[in-house]
Image (cartoon, rainbow over all chains, first blue to last red; front, side):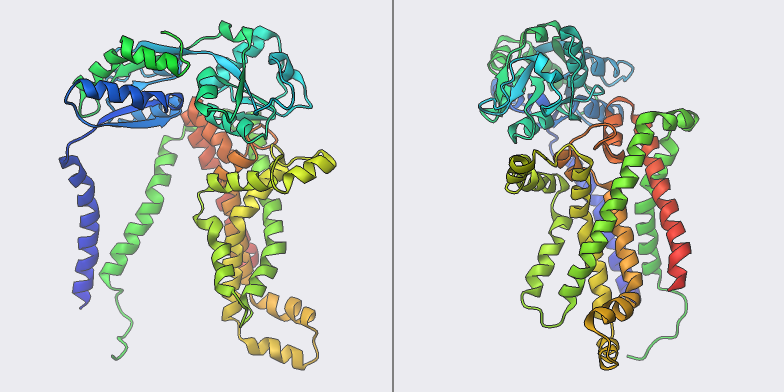
Length: 249
Length: 264
């Protein structure tokens, strides 16, 4: 009886270990790790890419660029990496699994306000008003370093109430009417679809954020990964990116 | 079945226990190995790190006091025999345990945010709004920490011999006197254990805080938020800060045990 129960525990543990390797035997998908701001547009591009040829299924891992870069450095089995920031991609230059990056899109900042713009925000100067509740990204993340540069270009010292770690969190705070204004990417305002309104700011043009994409050799489909990166610079993908509010590379 | 004499513990039990211990400690060892020890002194002297640590310890301690003041009475009510709807109430208490903390943060915003169900009238009447303040951090921590205390104290209360309360009553003690002088001292170890769990949970709270309270240095950026932010720019610093948070909480817990638990 005692031996039997012991055997059950051992079999259970072995089963757990075996289940992780059993997955590897199945057909591996093409894994795309991409910046969170591409969450809506990239699967649409992927559909077009897949329609063109008989390839593996595509799965997406959307997160902050820096988080994804760290995972790739630790050997995550991705085939393509699209970063929202050139600096983050450059940090991977010494990782052998990362191929030559190519810029596939660009983005500029825009002020997001709750529907109806209750605080009457008209531009970056409003970010200096301490009575307003204002949010932007923290300087440590790409959208925050872009925001810092735009504020500097406009000569505004922002009276922020919160420095969020990703741009979607800024959109959420504004969309919930917890903040009177937030500085986000133009594409985030479009993706929010009515939950927030965009206010264009002229100074934003001074800081254009570029999105580099690189094929990786750490996954199961390096060749398809290389083709997808190439496809991203093609006319079909560029059309979809433009519809989502991205600028040309 | 006759009881076996106590001898060598069964090996499957030891194997599983060893596995459980490894499961818990190996990831921590990973942090210790990776932490950038030569940079430790410099990184920890950074004002951001100290500020976050101070804010974390302060808010978690205030949250624990609130949890104690509200949680012990709730546990007492739940432990009363024959309480109608006790099963439903108990299930409600455990909701924050299973709710993803980020969802908890959204829920708090929906009620206590500037345009929330209760937050909007408050904002109109006083101009005050909870989000983006240290008070919001405490609210989030109480939300996630309260169940730990309530479940722990309720368990102790239910294990209590009801006759001790009856004896106190027959000796002429009032209900309030009985609660503070008989019931509470008896379940003190459960209260302490629950408070420690709630404090630890509050110290590690991330999702509800970042969603509900926001993220601003010195005001709402606790250590877990600082760690998450540092992960984006300086992962080694993030690891070091996590190790410090673990060390601080372990020291406090060990000291508490030595100081208090032996007395009971």
